[in-house]
Amino acid sequence: MNDAAAGIVVRNVSKTFRRAKETTGVQALHAVSLDIKPNTFVSLVGPSGCGKTTLLRMLNGLIHPDEGEILVGGVPPVPGPHMGFVFQSFRLMPWRTIRDNVSFTVELSGMDAKERADRADKYLDMVGLRRFADAFPNELSGGMKQRAALARALIAEPRYLLMDEPFASLDAQTREFMQIELMKIWQHHKSIVVFVTHSVDEAVVLSDQIVLLRPRPGEVAEVLDVDLPHPRWDYDVRERHEFVTMRRHLWERIKDMVAADPQSEFYMRGAKTEPIRGAEE
Image 1 (spheres, rainbow, N blue to C red):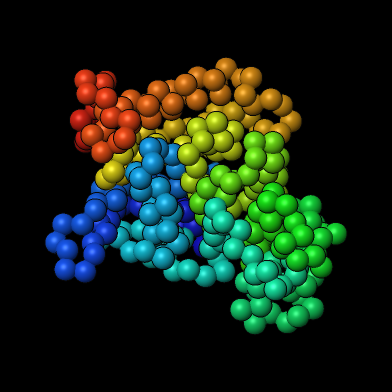
Image 2: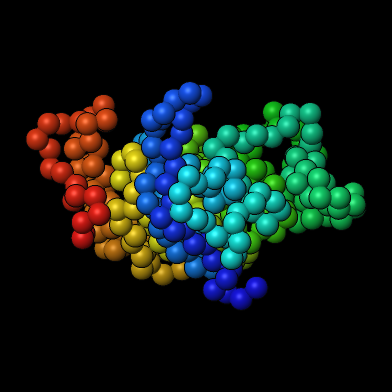
């Protein structure tokens, strides 16, 4: 597969969720288009309920669009070992050791016990959990459990890594350490990463590109390139002028969107409005 074909293409994708016998339903996404190049770290940000997780699950093939198309590596997406998925919750099986939790994905694919144990240890070492391989999930902290979940997603060596607010439940200090770990792993194991977050700071620190979505139904409001040098753990990203400028820009846009959205609990009549949908930015 050549580099161009290995990317992700989203073309005019819309999605509406309907209950049985319902004719209207809730439109989650409308006419979303994206091009994600290989070896790119992309974050999806926007107000709550703008369809970030829906889009992520469509990239994995767990949900199908009502309109438009998605191509992952040149074909419609299908869940499988080529597609790692890290959820907000750890989803570790309490009766299995950390090594056995991490190796579960390749166990399902039929890999023999010795090879999958060796590969689990390789990725546990990568996330700093090798000495906890024989421990059980209840013996680990929240940050350690999330590192185990990351190792489980990486063990099949996926070309695409999808992450749905994986650090949201962690304390601030652990979250920053996990961001550094993720950046190091991504530098070592180049792939496409699509990362959902509500944190503007986190998006700017981690990403090559940031996709800003409007309130429901989610549409692409803006795609921003993050011109901060790698590796970003070698310096204080948050002190850079580029970080401050981009963070301010994103936060102001999100704040204006939420204040002007009648569906929002923070709606303010007369608030500054976003550009008309479909108009030039």
